[in-house]
Length: 333
Ligand SMILES: NC(=O)c1ccc[n+]([C@@H]2O[C@H](COP(=O)([O-])OP(=O)(O)OC[C@H]3O[C@@H](n4cnc5c(N)ncnc54)[C@H](OP(=O)(O)O)[C@@H]3O)[C@@H](O)[C@H]2O)c1
Image 1 (cartoon, helix red, strand yellow):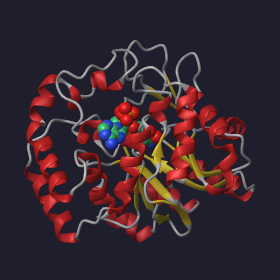
Image 2: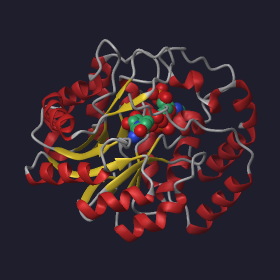
Image 3: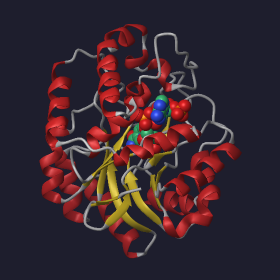
Image 4: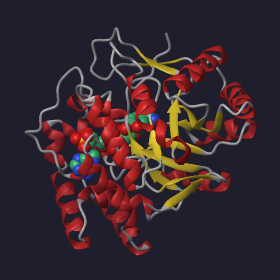
C-alpha cells in the first residue's frame, strides 16, 4: 500500500486499520482467532498502521483490544506502527449503550497507563500515543510535558490528541510537537475542515476516525438493519435510526452512483474523497471482515482529481442528511 507522512517524519500506510470494533462498541466482541488471522492478513495486504485504545473492551475484559493486537502483531512489530490512547475510561455503571467518557489525564495515571499498554501490546514502544479527550482538571500543557518525557525515555515515538480544537492543539504543540490529531471526519462529519489551515501551518497530520460515518457511508445498511441494544453503539446513533435512514437515502443513492462511475464501492469513494483532499490525511476505517479490510485498503489507489473532490464537497454542502453520531458524552466525576 502507498504510504503517507504524518507530522514531520511519521510514515504510515495511507489507510490504517481501526481495530475498535473487534472488541468494543459494535456488538459482541469478535472471535479472537478470526481477528488474529485478519490482522495478519492486513499486514500481508500492506496495512502498517493499527489503531487501538486502552479502553477498547467490555466490562468483563476492559483492555481486550490492546491484548488482541499485542498477540496478533508481535511477529510483525518491526514493520508496523501502533497507535493507542490513554487518559479516559468509560462509566460502566451507566445504563446507556454509549457509556459516558470519564477523563483522567493526571500524570500518575498516564505513567501507569503507558506501562500497562506496553505490556499488553508486547512491545517496548508505542508509535503514536493519543490523549482522546481533554481533562478539565489537567491543562493540556501538563499532558504535553509528560509526553515530552515519554518521548525522551523512548516509550513513545510520537503523540497526538483526539477530538481536539485548534486552540488546544496550539497550546499542546508549543510544549511538545504534536504529530497528528485523531478527529472524527467523514462526508457526514466535516466540522473540523475549518481547522485544516492550522494543521497545515503546524505540519500536523489528521488521522480520520469513523471515516465512513460508523459504516453508514458504505451503503450496506438500511432501516431493517438490526444493531444490538446495550452493546452496539449504532443502535443509538442518529444516522442509523429509522428517520435518519430515510433522510439519508438521497446521500446513499448519490454515493452509489459516484462509486459506479469510478468503478469503486461506496466505502472506497468515502475514503478516496478524503485521501485525495490532503496528502496528510490518513483514514482508519474499522472492519472485522477480511474482504472489507481489503476493499478499504484498495481505496488508497483510487484517484479523484481536485475538481472531483471539490464537486463532491459542493454536493455534500447541498445534500440533506441526518445528524451523525458525535461521540459519547464526556463527564468529569
Ligand atoms: N478517537 C476516538 O475517539 C475514536 C472514536 C471511534 C473510533 N475510533 C477509531 O476509528 C476506527 C474506525 O471508526 P469506526 O469503526 O467507528 O467507523 P467506520 O470506520 O466509519 O465504520 C466501521 C463500520 O463499517 C463497517 N464496514 C467497514 N468497511 C466496510 C465496507 N467496505 N463495506 C461495508 N461495511 C463496512 C464495519 O462493519 P464490519 O466490521 O462488519 O465490516 C463497521 O461496523 C475505530 O476502529 C477506532 O480505532 C476512534
